[in-house]
Image (tube, rainbow, N blue to C red; front, side, top):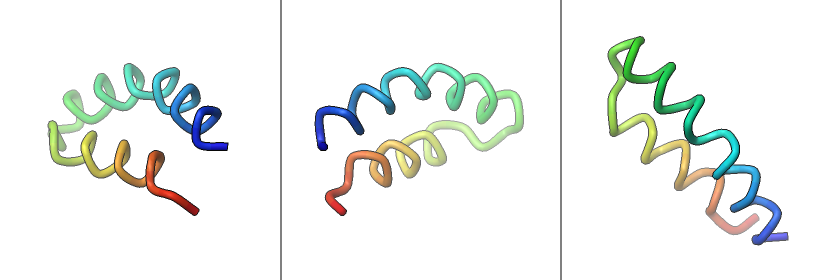
Length: 41
């Protein structure tokens, strides 16, 4: 399950980083999104 989440996160991360940077959220939003995606449960 964790491996699937990590693979999904890796697929989504580039889109997140592009949309977040362009929207002005920056690294914090990316880190939050990644931590949520990787967090157990």
